[in-house]
Image 1 (cartoon, rainbow, N blue to C red):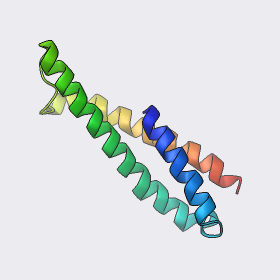
Image 2: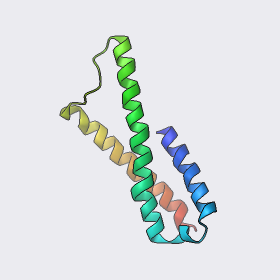
Image 3: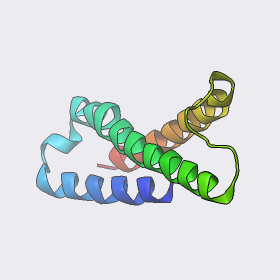
Length: 97
């Protein structure tokens, strides 16, 4: 989660400096929230699950992958909560523009 926040913070700063006029547009912001944020989250959370699976395999614990349907609910709820929090954080910064 920390890497997602840092990556999106850096990307948002670069986007604000690169597209100074377009970044104030609501459609541009919603595109960023709807495309870039989920992409970064999927990449980092996917890498986290793969890493957790390798650690579990080396430690003798049961493997994490493949994910069973009953184990997906906490992951989905946590990811949605994180996405909403990340969106609100970005929106608060965008609103000041």
